Length: 198
Image 1 (spheres, rainbow, N blue to C red):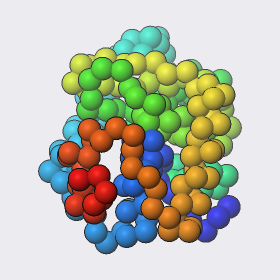
Image 2: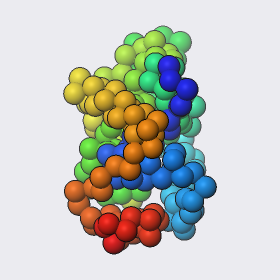
Image 3: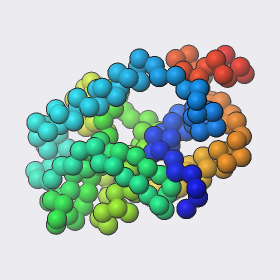
Image 4: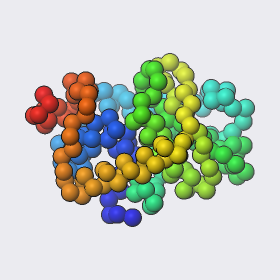
């Protein structure tokens, strides 16, 4: 494994805007903490409490053992992170399948960047627990709905290629190109550093 270990959220952010990952790792002292970021963290903590009271029917399941806020570290991928929810079927001791769940404060279908993050957690659980992860869910908190995601071979490969690209960018401190769509730039906490897009 390389010396650097990245956060799983770096993959999601890279797919959304690679420059944010560059700023976080190559200029780590400049990131401001926004009110939106703080609100998102608080909402995630509150959702875990609600999840404990929620039925597994939300995920189309009749049984399973839930584990909340599970810390993970992968030597193979060079990633670390905390997955919001892991469901072992039928339970942790006899698990034949594991499902990963991520809470999101967004409405509508999850974008590719969120599915990439979920897949990274799936790979890390497989490595740590030795149990296959074939599917996961994005739980959209505003809508109280779970969106199923198949952990496909294409998504798995994308995790590996994205980690490799991030590692090369950070190791060589190369500024990535801006995202194709500039809509997210309007609310980005780093917009004042990207003089070529604002």
